[in-house]
Length: 232
Image 1 (cartoon, rainbow, N blue to C red):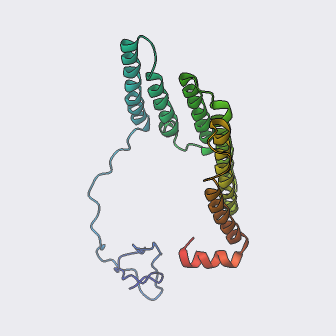
Image 2: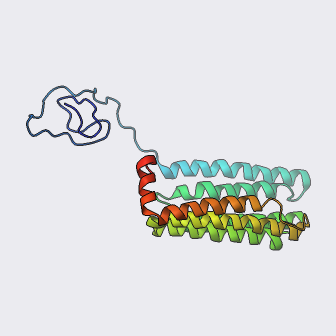
Image 3: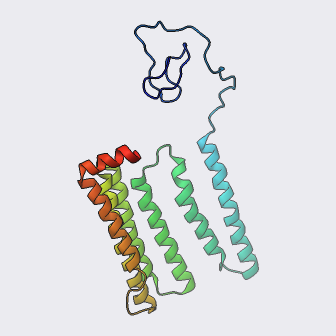
């Protein structure tokens, strides 16, 4: 007996194809009572690891180096110097990677803005600690523009999944514009160049790829053809 969908040979006792999952049914053949083709799984099911326990261990492992850095810095220099960067980096890493793991189904619409807010605060601290004057003219506008772009994309993809091609195409085009904004603010803040040099290339790539996705989204026959050929 063979699967009607993928053609794999089936044992008489199988009710579902092991390769594609298609239900096995033949109206002229009785269901066999033979031995199953695979031995039963004798390994016992392991108990699920406690997520809270794992996150507690991760939190402690990230807290220890932060405390040690502050103590060493205070012991050597008498005040906080380099340890602030280490602690800030660890806190940022914890917010980006570990904080969503406390929840079973973290909502990206909530956590993505929180991530960008944490990045902006860390850059503000770096600017303050180094005595720089680049935060308001460069770091904050770039971080804010990237946050708006990514948050809008994540939110639209969650609530409008059927418009994914339109959303991704528009995001690629806007990403190219973000590269132009970054170079403009670099030139304005640090006085590097008077013209645009490198941002034209990501802008061109973003426009071409974004326009291609928009064309695919608009053309239904083209979308079907790509789906049949590449399973997109």
